[in-house]
Image (cartoon, rainbow, N blue to C red):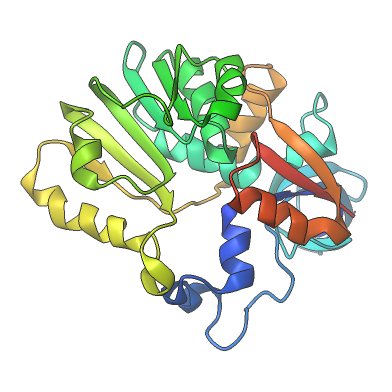
Length: 285
């Protein structure tokens, strides 16, 4: 399907894609040059044309999901679902990668559990706080001082400013989003059979980046009763459908920090890397 892009979301994967860092990531992004010359994955738009084998969609349908090279006027769709009528295109474009990642790392969370979200003010974190609350968990969000009120507005039971307060207590699930804390520090925050989930990371240098902590999880996993995970971000059509239901019901809401024109993609990526964004930045053609 060919989709006319009305809005495209910016996520950390975009930075890795355009910089080719860490170098190990080039096995996926492309070794000598990017496999996708135009960056961008998240999108919301209008179906322009469909192939002969496409069913369920027709030109004129409003959709959101994943495309190839969405920082453009048109994209070929990979995984899309109908856009909720109560969302703008800008809101819908802020959903796919970040919200699907949050849904994946929260699988198995039960009502009454305590969940710690480190990095609660970003794209994945803003959805993780909301989804964990929907699932009935008590959520503690960790963020910088400029995002405390924002994270509280997402439904967090408690918000911790990491610049002034040390993390303590024990949680059934700890999500460390784009963090750099050592694994032993994080494991001390878990209950004896709690779950630690690493969601990306930015330390580790230019060669392997945050993959160093993922390797650490694999090494430690056989020797502890605690559950250690470092999943990849995967967008499934079934997850987009589930999120669409929650969005339509108003149980979760996309947090769009700002909308920028296509020419300002470099500025958007810089803001994202400097942790200045509350939720997501969205690009419009």
